[in-house]
Amino acid sequence: MKNKATPSRPLSPRQMAVRILNRVDEQGAYAEPLLDSYLSSYLPDDGRNRKLVTQIVLGTLRMRGYLDWMIEQFYHGDFPAMEGGLKNILRTALYQIFYLDRIPSYAVVNEAVRLTEAAFRGRGALVNAVLRNIIRHRKTMRLPEQNRNLPLYIAVVHSHPRWLAEKWITFFGEDEAIRLCSAFNEIPPVMVRVNTLKDSREAVLSEMCRTGWEAAASHYSPDGIRIGRSEHPIRDTSWFEEGRIQIQDEGSQLISRLVAPQPGDAVLDLCAGTGGKTAHLAALMGNRGKILAMDNQEKKLESLRMMNGRLGVTCVETLSRDGREPPPEHLREAFDRILVDAPCTGLGTLRRNPEIKWRLTPAEIVQSAALQSDLLDSAARYLKKGGHLVYSTCSLLPEENEDNVRAFLTRHDTFRHDRSVSTIPGNCMDQNGFMKTLPHRHDMDGFFAALLVKCA
Image (cartoon, rainbow, N blue to C red; front, top):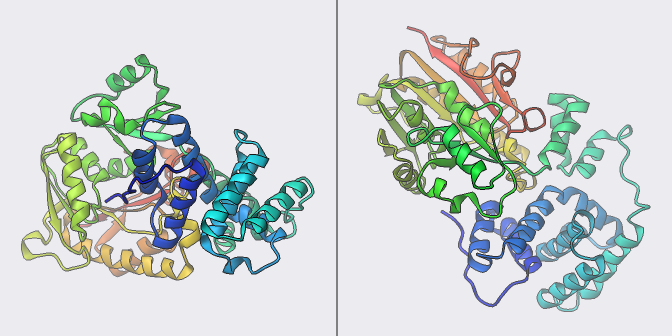
């Protein structure tokens, strides 16, 4: 469910951006739904300022490591102990000064001081001094040297927590870690999946281009369309309202293709969430067969049912249940295909959810991997002999991906890893037979998936 903003007196775009960032930090909220809520409440028809607020919020989150590094060069107090709201005023001001050219620096500084005095009376002089010092020395600041301390260089220049930069270097090597972290700071394309229960990609794409939208067929998914610059949110279009399209990253679309359900199959989506992949499975089956969408959060299943109504999906039943629990007797070995799209750290989605990298801790990775392991063990009991199980995450960490799959195969000798995948483009499969999409290679979010078969 979206966080809702309550309109009161008008907010300036920069004031709104700071409020959103404060809620992201203080409440653990996600920026994207907060943006949707604030923009629809305060700026429903102001396309220019909607774009500005979005740029400031997401840009500040993406580049927070670099922005904080600059502040620490010129703030002589204890920066980690500084009030969060004051940090966000400084961060948003610096983001505008260094990354946006719409507003002169002096105007940004003046607005930052005004916001500071309204929220932190008496601290405006501090903000003014820090910002003006950074502006004065912007051309002479010396960044960490890449060849002397690569993790620190990535942490600052490409704005990642240092511990995460070290992980990417270990897993991907030095050059690719830099490319990956750089790609995570880019603005991702808007991707939609055409709902083939209602229309074809060719027809929808033709309509979009005819009516002036910048749109092109996706590179890898047969159902995807990439949306370019547009004046209106995709959710406000007739294509979305009529259920002919669904917003879904291209990498996410490939997961359902890997499951490859057939019309008439019995399919279990063990961690269905709000059902983006569930609906795609239904489309691939032509609404013929049965999908059981399971999740332990009833609110997510409510959203799933609403979406299915818009998309015309009729073959899905829902069950509110913890996927780790042993299956009821009537569901034991009852499914031809199972998708375990496991809860994960979400580190593959940093282009869209940059706040994740600032709140995640190494301890949470261990907890996430343990949960995923339990879900895989449970899923094995639901699958028929000869059935297919797809395990997927939107993470790039081996602890959540390859390590989990190999440990599962060690515990379950009736399963094998099927590397002969034909439903996914070959360049989205790695040398070990795992599906892996990467933003710097494929211009998609980072997804991992493995196809496992239960031997008869």
